[in-house]
Length: 511
Image (cartoon, helix red, strand yellow):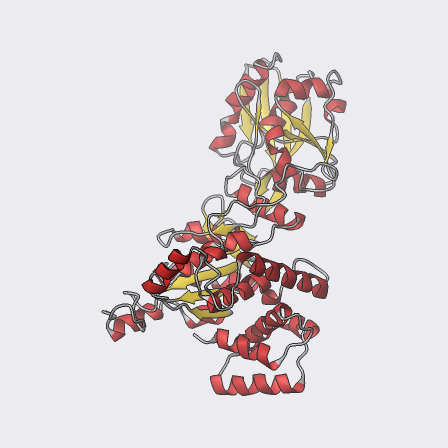
């Protein structure tokens, strides 16, 4: 007798349906597993056998053959433990075909029969829903993440025996509909170490940071050591709005694919060290997993001291900064992950950091300065919307600020954290109304979308044309200025882009 149970495994950014077929025939007791399974899957034989026996069920003393179809797809991970066990129980007639009909199973078994959470549960649940399944049995530890996916009933399971009794109708488990289940989620996130109120002065840099977050524009801070570049970047998590349900699903999905089981409730702020490998930042491995570029999706990728990163990593930013996704190709596999993030980068003006500053004399030769600055290629700079020179304030001003004890009261025009956060949220609300979606921002508009949504008057067109001729701007730079000026106009509560908005956008475009 052959029994068939359905499950799925994560495969790139999606999931693949797996048919688990079990055949029990007379012969010496042996447990065979076929179907392109890796070592992790082969180890499930011992887990499944012990889990069945320790759940007061009977492991058949027959020749057991389990096939994982399709056979040309490499299977990895412990996701298929539970469906293999259910297929064997059905094949040995401890469960009937009616007990498992139209049901979907996923989970890792411990030796005692308890179910442990698995990675990539959102990929699996989406694959089950898209294949037409309406019921999925999964580990209770995966419930919060799985509940983000709409359109399917979830049955959280603690152990194999509990599932067996439910399928036999003896101890029913109440289903949970993802539409009505609200996973525990903090209403607000307030425990941030750094806010803009702790940053003295630097109003011009704060203005640039506000524009970057309000319109999803990439930004580069350049300045000497100690000028506050990194401190400004560390205030970003406190300024970012919480993700909506769709964004939360994609963020959690990518996080789980990187072998992390915690559900994410805030926008990611990824800050890899410059010594990180290209595989860690870009993504890769076997199987291919997302890197920091994709894990920053719907959030911020912060690259401190950008020229210190390898050239391979810096140049790999070209595709995601332009297309908001990254394709990783290997000999036997090709995966495309989303990568719609805000790039926030910092750099010094030279290797010693003091070129052009009044702190101390620069010790670098002209060749060293040129070689250092050329580490950031023109195409990469052309994809960065805002470039800001952050000046060093001086020790005396900083000491005076500490003596006064109020970070914002000594500024000529205070830009408090609360004020800037509200400005960012207002600008995002304007964009949501204009584009009729919360997935489109000024900073990621394509050329066709710019033509559709943004209109310039004749005087503004002439001003932009004059600036283009004088500064010899590329076509990408022109589109970048138009997108940034639209964000400036949103912060100014203006329906139309004006000359002053274009002028400010042009000033931020100069290195």
